[in-house]
Image (cartoon, rainbow, N blue to C red; front, side):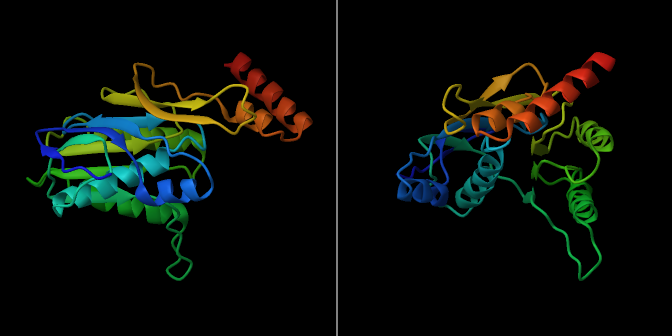
Length: 233
C-alpha cells in the first residue's frame, strides 16, 4: 500500500496514513481514515480542531513522510508530491526534564527557539510544531503563538505547520479537523482536514464530554460559566 511520490516545489499529499496507528486500529477492529494535506514554503499553515481530532497524529505522519521521502522510501499515501528540505525540525510533546530543572514550558520554548534560529540562514527548513505554549496560561499562550507566526511570516525558505488550540488570525493557511460526528455518543470522529477561512478554534470540548457521558452537572456548569464569560466581553 505504499507509493513512490513525485517531486515538486510544494507538498501535496492525498490519502496519507500512519502505518503503526492503522495497524493498531485494525487490531481493534477499526478502520484508519486517511487524510489529505498540503503546505508550501513562505506560507505558514495552522491546524485547528477538537481534542481527539487526530492533529498530533497528522503532524507525526507529515514528519515521517518527509524523512521517508528524503531517504528514498515509498510513502504510506494514495499519492503525493513532495519537496526536499535541508533541515526538519519537529517540536512536540512534554519535554519536562526534572534532572536539568527544565519545566515543560521551558524545554519547549528552548527547542522552538533553536528551530527559529535556524531560519534565514540560506537553508530550506521544515518546521512542525505541535500545540506550542499549551503548558502556560491561555492569555500568554495565545500571544506567544500569534507572535511566533508573525516572527516567521514571509520566510520564503521556511515551511511551517503548527497545530494549536488557540484562536490566532494570521496571513497563512488554516486547516480544520471535521470533528465529532453528531449522535455517535463520542465514538465516531471525522478526521479529515479541510481548508477553512476562519481561524476560530471550534468549541467542541463540552459536546464531546456530553457524548462521552461525563457527569452532566459538571458539564452544564462549565457551559454556564463559558456563556457568562462570553457575555461579559
